[in-house]
Amino acid sequence: VVNWFRRQTQRVVVPRLHSRDEAFAGVSRVELAELTPDLLPYLAQAAYLQLTVFELLSEVVTDAPTVGAKEAISRVAGYSLDKQHKLVAELQRIKGTDAGDAMQPYAARIDAYRAGTRGATWAEALTSAYVTAGLLDDFYRRVAVGLPADASRRVLEIYDAEDGESILVDQLRSAIEADPKLASPLALWGRRLVGDTLLIARSALALPTDGHSEEERLEPVFTELIAAHTRRMDALGLTA
Amino acid sequence: VVNWFRRQTQRVVVPRLHSRDEAFAGVSRVELAELTPDLLPYLAQAAYLQLTVFELLSEVVTDAPTVGAKEAISRVAGYSLDKQHKLVAELQRIKGTDAGDAMQPYAARIDAYRAGTRGATWAEALTSAYVTAGLLDDFYRRVAVGLPADASRRVLEIYDAEDGESILVDQLRSAIEADPKLASPLALWGRRLVGDTLLIARSALALPTDGHSEEERLEPVFTELIAAHTRRMDALGLTA
Image (cartoon, rainbow over the protein chains, first blue to last red):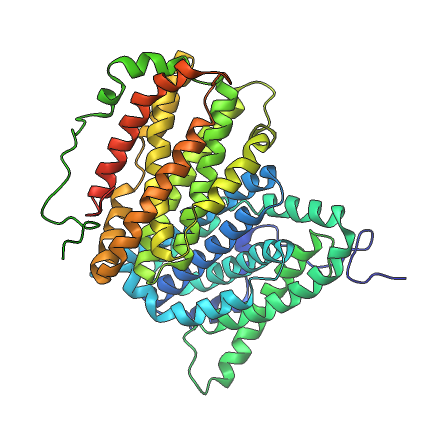
């Protein structure tokens, strides 16, 4: 029986980016900047999404099967919270901005996204934390190119800080090794996560309602995001 | 009708300590040192309890009724996690110690304590985070006097760091102001929390099984802890 959900010897051939900057190369970098929202909605959505990533990670800490796993994942929750607080600090640099008020308009939609991507098991929640944080970081890093130069530089520094991704990979690989039956449902779960996450990402952009040409502009960006997602699933030995 | 759960004009007269050091003054400081466990069990229990405080705070973040409350309480969760990571770093200074393995023996008892002190509502969970973290910090600070001098100094620094307590007080006062009917159940809930928390604290000490004289030694310490707890409830306008 060929288990197409799990790859251990064969791996997908995906062009690997040698640095994050290369991800911005070419056409998509320039054109995406035109879809970048204003600084306030950019930061408000990024910060609220980051808060939900933290909340998800903290649930994964609480439900972890061993104290060692709790301890390890709590590091990732800490990185996530640091990032969120830095995004909020950027939000508060904008005069007269209350962070809570700024995030509030996006709360209902993002809460619904979070409820749909929480997962039914610990392994699913851990996969969500890994996959959605990776996709969202990639997306917000790319969109940041269209922000005012100073803010753009600071936001990229925030997204380039240590995020503990390798800790999540280690935990997920251990979970799958301990119970290989997890591979198939987690591979499917990963697909669901991409769909939902790209939708919430898309909704953050400054898209005109009749924007057919914008859809074309977005396509190469989403292709890049999905390629990065494929590498992330590949690191787990799972198909994307 | 006299609402004895809530005090707004009359306040309990409790001697206020002018600094944390004064709490160590007198007989109890010397005698408690004899009940201080070895460094490894001290740190392992303190770190695991701190992890559960963080988990509780992160649930309070997730369930917060407004984005502003989420954002504010996430700061406290961050302080709590920093403290936990510093306690784990101390644990890892002890040669050959794996933090997860060191904490594991205490997990079942502390998890049961946590399940019993979680609370049924957001306001109860928020009260728990405030009351139990306050009591546990006070307790572990006092017990630290019996640790080896270097470790004792570093541990006291960890416990003296910013903990965001005033943020929790603000949130709780707002919640009670918005819904005064909360005062009575929260005052009762506070009593339950003291009982459970002093029991879990007591179980961390190096008590001989037939320790009648140790009970006497503990009494002034618990009296101090309860006095500090009374001041904490008083800050909410609630009876302790």
